[in-house]
Length: 159
Image (cartoon, rainbow, N blue to C red; front, side):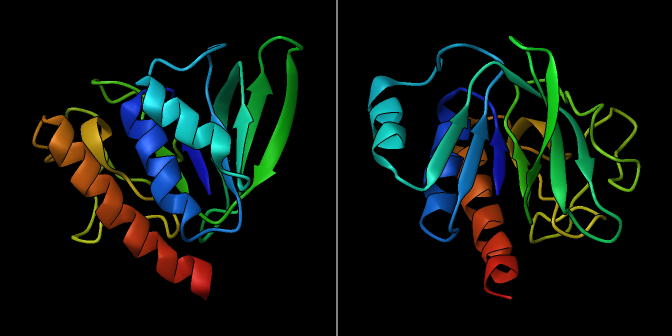
């Protein structure tokens, strides 16, 4: 699994996914998290969460489902790929999802469309929180959606 972001929601999602996935990659474009310290401490204590500092996601790769995420390491300007079966973006209050493949449908405002299980039109890509069409706007909604999406994604992990 790959989680993008450095705030509370991204770290909370990584912690939820870490309970189900063998490996969680947390990609953050910054050099430190903006999340609350207790979440940062919990992330640091998880052996199966890898942090990718100063890293920007360039593309989600895959034909019928997510297979990898193309990233750019900003300090070295080096491109690479992180193999994964699921992708979660927690990148702000506006739908910053230009890197998401065209197969992931959006509404007129640019927000990602999902089914009731929070999966997009592209298998293995889930959306929760501010990037998703229909998001309630509260952090508690984003957290609940993140948990629901993680549970939906766990069926991919077990498959």
